[in-house]
Length: 380
Image 1: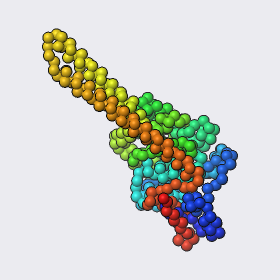
Image 2: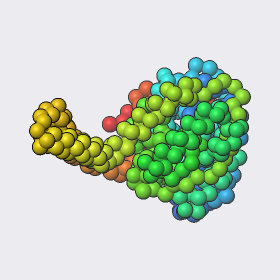
Image 3: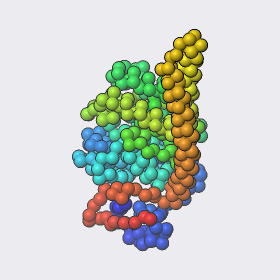
Image 4: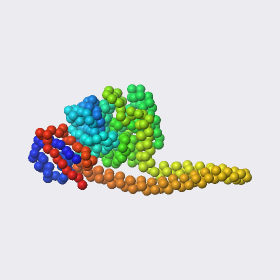
């Protein structure tokens, strides 16, 4: 990772050399926290890809003073933009930019942004889209439940019954998906696809996004499995004035990919329950086929296809049960790995910035070759 910082105080840079290497990788020391609400830090993470027409307005509209918050910082994750997105973010007053040299997708941008936010000692992290559809003025209501200690994760839910909140097809798809999430995945929210949300620091150390598409469903399912407190506040979305959504450009494709992601995430969370139910279904079908064969045999007939179906279904049931037991063992190991990762996140977030991909660049301020110096650190 390469960080750029204004070289206005060479003495401070020399003093930083006496700090632990990890704490000076961004040219700063980890601040001391007193636990006072005036020291509570909010970091706003804005993933952006070629949003030069809207990023400036979004950054400038982020409120810098909020009740119960002592400091607000804004981070833009430039996911490989080839336009003026980064320049206009700097001009609008962004505090930090993490740049991906190529487009990696929304989930990767979320991971990079939350990594940087935790490294900057954030107590609360808010994710905000760069297209201008989310209203930054509602941020005080969004973070209020976390500030009050009543929630771990808060989602800005759109009033999907309102015709102004998108096309009928998209609103219907969101409502159906949210209903399924409430019924089957135990996610008590009315808008599970909204990317405008707030996380507590502890919550983000427990969520580990591995999807390559989006983080929205993945994080909510994990939060439900780990019994984190979730709530929502109603925040109407604003109409997008430039371009179209890349995520929902094709509604059917979006539903297919998010549905597949939701199934995989829930399967990873409790594979034995999923495979057990399938095994029980096959077993019931095998019993019915066996009863049909025995009834036919007792009546003097010989319905061999029913017997063959019963054998195959019984074998399928046993195979699914074995798969469920194996998957449950893998899931137990996964939970141990996640617990270890959570502990590592806590330690690294408390002491120093965490590691980025080898080719990602973390920019403290807009690079100026005449007034900046480079701090380069290798991480083992």
